[in-house]
Length: 435
Image (cartoon, rainbow, N blue to C red; front, side, top):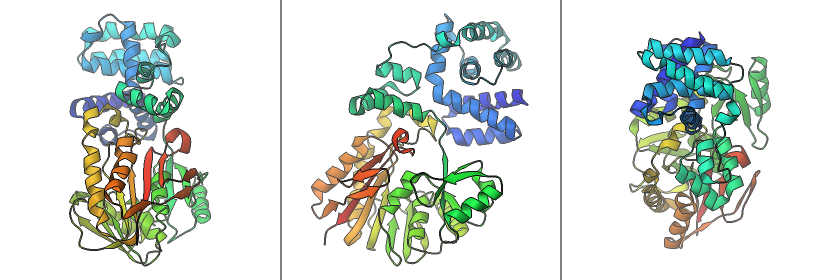
C-alpha cells in the first residue's frame, strides 16, 4: 500500500537523521521491516532518495511557505519534506494524496497539533509549485547549493576549479539515478552470450557505449539469470578501466592493496585469464569475506586474501600493484547521497594517508612494474597533488601515458566525471618503476 511506502520512506529518513547510518543500509532494513511488495518498495525508495538528494531545495520551499522556520520539529519537517518532494517532482502522484497522507502521518505519529500547519504549508506550495521552487541568485555557488542540495563549500570548490556551467552539470548528474553496469566474466561467457541470456529472461540489458565486455542493466542483479553461475559482477566502468590500463598479463604476481569489496581483484583475475597470483588485502578483516565469496561465485582461483594496513611493510615484490586508496568519496554521491552531508574537515587528513600508502607500496614493486593509484573522489588535493608529491620524492618512478575510449591521458592521469563520461567521479594514475 502507498501509505506504508510513504511511512517506510519517512522512517528511513528519521533513522538516517538520528544515527547517521548509510542510506542504502537503512532503506533495505526498513523495506524489509514493512514487508513492502516490489511496487511499494520502489515508491518508498523514490521518495526516500529524492528527499536525500534534494533536502536543501525542499527545506527552501518549506521555509518560504511558512513563518516558523526554526520552530518546525524534526519529525514534522521530515513529513513535510516527503510531501513536498512528491508535489514538486512526482507528477504521477495526485497532489491531494501527498497532502492528505502527510496530514494523516502527523495524526498517527503523535503530532496532531501540527496537522493543520502541515496542511496549510503544503496547500500553499501546491498552489504554485514553480514559485515555490524559485530560488534566485542563479549563477552563484549559493544557488547551486540550494538547488542541487550540495554543501556550499563543495559548490564553491567546483566552481572555482572548473567553472559555473561545469559545476551545474556535475551537480545535476549527482542527483540523477545512476545506471547499473555489470562486467562480463569472460572466464565463463562472452558479452553477446550474456546479453542474449539476460534478454531472454526479461532483463532490460544493453551493451555499454564505450566499455568492452560491459552491460547496462535494470533491476536487482542478484535475481538475474546467470548471477549464481558467476557470469558477471557489478562494477562501474571507471573502476574497471583503472584495471584495464594496468595491462595485466597471465602469470603475473599482483597486489590489490585496498581491495574490498573485490571488483578490481576480479577484473585483474579476468585480465590475467585466471593464471598467476593476486594478493587482495583490506584493513578490515570482516570485509575479506566479500572478496572470497565473490571470487568463488565467479570461478576465480588465483586470489588470496589478507587483512593488513596498506601502510605496513610488504615482504614480497609484485609485477603490478593496484592502490584504490581510502578517499573522501565525493565522486560517488549519485550512489551514496549521504556523502554530501559529511563535514568538509573529514577530508583534510586524507592526502597524508594516501601519500603514506603510495610511498609504502612503491617499495613492493618490481623494476619496470606498474602501480595504479586511484580514488573515487574529484578533489585535486587527493588526486594529482598526491601523485605529484610522490613523484617529487621518488625519482625512480614516472607516470605512463594511456588512452581510454573517453580520452587521452598524456600525463598519465585521468579524472572521470559523471556528466562527461557517464561514470562515477573517479581518478586514476598509471605509474611505472624505472629499470
